[in-house]
Figure: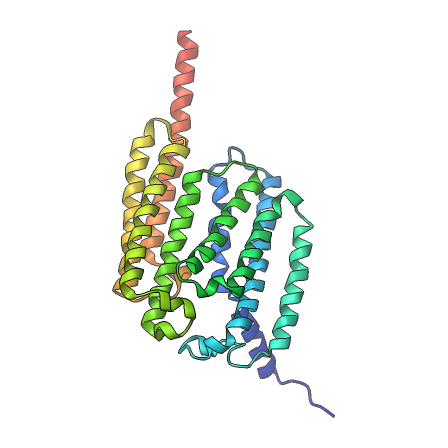
Length: 313
C-alpha cells in the first residue's frame, strides 16, 4: 500500500506553487490599475468592485503567463545561475502538471471575465495575445521584447480607467510605457552582468553601452511625460505651479535613485523589489501627499472664489 505524502513534501509542493505564481510580482497590478482613481471625479462602490475584478483578472492572467513562460523557458533557465532553481526548470514541478495548472488558471480567468462587461475584456485579451506572440517570436528580438513587457503595464492602466469609466491621459500612458521600458532595460542590464548574452537570444542584441543609453533615454522621457501629465491632467487650481515643482523634485529623486540602484548596486534584476526601496517609496509617498493636498486646496480655493463672486453678484 502506497504511503501518504509526508508533510514535508506537501509543504515543498506548496512552496514551489507559490514560487511559480510569483506573488512578489502581484503588487504591480495594485500599483498600475488603480492609478485610474487619480482621475476619477467620484469614487463609488460599483467602481471599486469593477476595479477589484480588474486587478484580480490581471493577477490571474499574469500568473498563467508566468507558468507558460516558465514552461517554454525551462531549458534556458537551467543555464542561468539563479533561474535554474525555478520549480519547472529544476524539475520539481513536471511539465504536464504545469500545463494542467495553466489550464485551471485559464478557467478561473474566464470566470472572472464573466463578472465584468465584455467591453472591458479587450485589455486582458490583448495582454494574453502579446504574451503568446512573445513566447512565439518577440522574446528573441532585442528591444521589441522590452516593448512587449512594457505593453502589459499599459494595458493594466487602460483596464483600470475602463473600470472607473474615465478617459485616460495620453501623457500618463507615455509615462507608464517609458517607465516600464526603463525598468525592463534595467533588468536586461542585470541579466547581461549575471549570465552574459548566452542566456537568451534577445540578449545578443544588447550590450552594456546600449542598455545604459536606453535606460538614460527612457528615464528622461518618463520624467518629461510625468510632468506633462501633472501639468495637463491634475486639477490643482492655483497650486498647480507648486505641485509641478514638487512633482519634478520627487520624480527626479525617484529616477536618480533607480539609476543608482541599477548602476552602482546592480539591483536591476528585481524591478518590483526596487519599487519598495525606501528612497523611491518615500519620494512616491511625499508626492502623493503633495498631490492630495493640492487637490483639496485647489477645490477649496475655487469654492472661496465662487462664494466671493456669488456675494458680490
